[in-house]
Amino acid sequence: MIPVAFDVVEVALADHLATALAARGIAVPVINGVPHVRPPRYVLVVRIGGIQENLITDAPRVIFECCDEFGTGAAELAKVVRALIGSFAPGYVGGIWFDKVKDLGLVFSPDPDTNF
Image (cartoon, rainbow, N blue to C red; front, side, top):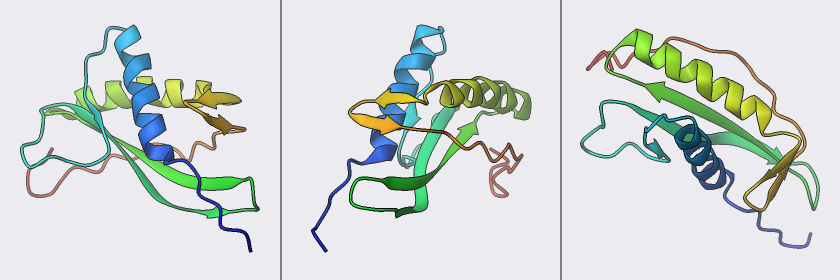
């Protein structure tokens, strides 16, 4: 098999989402890893799996965690993030083509240690 390297999808999505949120007046860090000192509000974008379907098609599985000091704030942020992510396809995010986005829903999952 020919070695194929795909772009890092979670970085492209985080950058694109940060720009889209800022354009709507929502100033929130969109990150790919949680820093030692957590911001009070942020969106975490992480690739949790997926497959390479063929030589040109990557099918990543990505989650978007919307965090806020309050559950209602996280829910409001998740509502906007969900709408924006759904609007990205079909189209390019950075240099990556997105044919479709499959939304698997929302879940309330607070951190048991911080309730964050």
